[in-house]
Image (cartoon, rainbow, N blue to C red; front, side, top):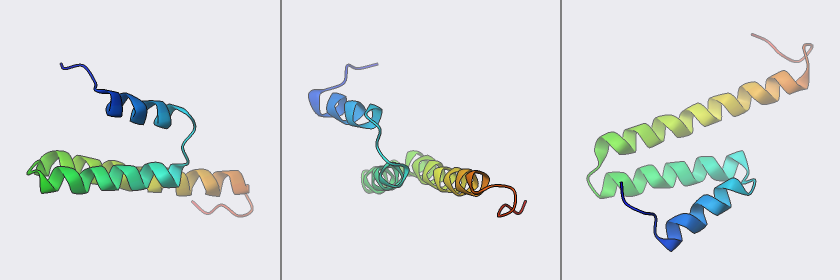
Length: 73
């Protein structure tokens, strides 16, 4: 495994600093686009699935935090 370059380390620091879920989803979607453009189709699909999962989890969390009266399973 190679060592991360400075730009990659900066991105990791940004992600560890409390980035919003919406911004993280956008970053993961952009990563999928970049991967697809470079020919890494399987990895791009994984990134897109991860972004979709983050959206799903975020919606569920918001519904649960809204309370039982507003939550429909």
